[in-house]
Image (cartoon, rainbow, N blue to C red; front, side, top):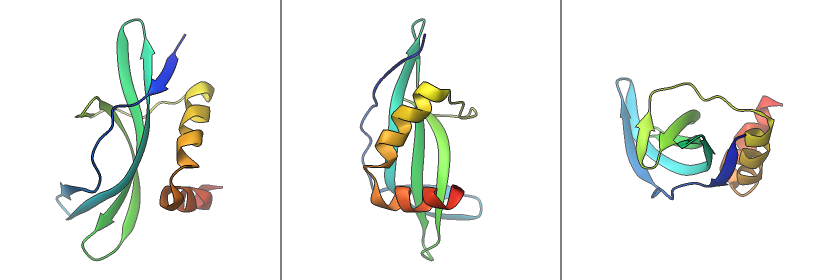
Length: 99
């Protein structure tokens, strides 16, 4: 069974850079999931580019290390992450557009 707990705090804002543009991670929410001695942190980031465009990135961390793997969520993890979304005004407003 997956255990959900508090994630590693990471400083925001912090810079990011892609081939097509750069900017800052303005907000970030995450939870820590653990099972059988393995852990990962499902994360949602609000990215803001230099021109003001905003995007949400759904990703995974292990502590402060970004992992290149898909974000997989079960119902327990979705509930825990939803609680964190409610604490972030800008991420919450963008997430409403998914409904």
